[in-house]
Length: 132
Image (cartoon, rainbow, N blue to C red; front, side, top):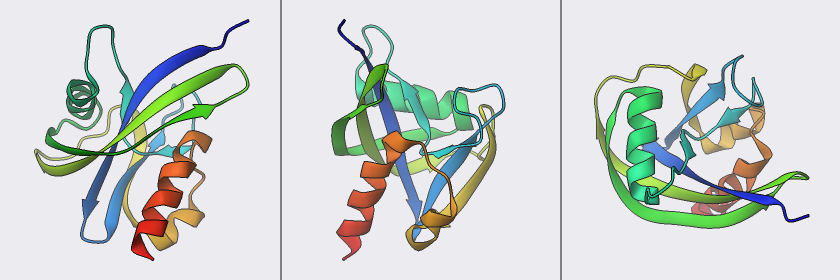
């Protein structure tokens, strides 16, 4: 049986050396795990439009989408995720939580204190390596 592939975007939003991350709320899949904001690409939507929509829905911000930072497929036992992470260069609006029960600005060297979704770990590794 062929595994389903779900296309998902993630936002890398930084302020100085801190990055915006959110903890999945109790009504979400994988509650309590941390992630970069973002979500599933809808039928007929391109990744850039998806990340803009998701950031508006999840955080109530209007974002200017920068370059694609990385794209990879992450395999879970039942499903595969085709992940597109974009740099968000500028955003406007006050951050409001809707799907996350917590959002925080965190420095990369403190990421090990947070339990991230497994699918976000490769992008965290790349961010760390880019600082070396």
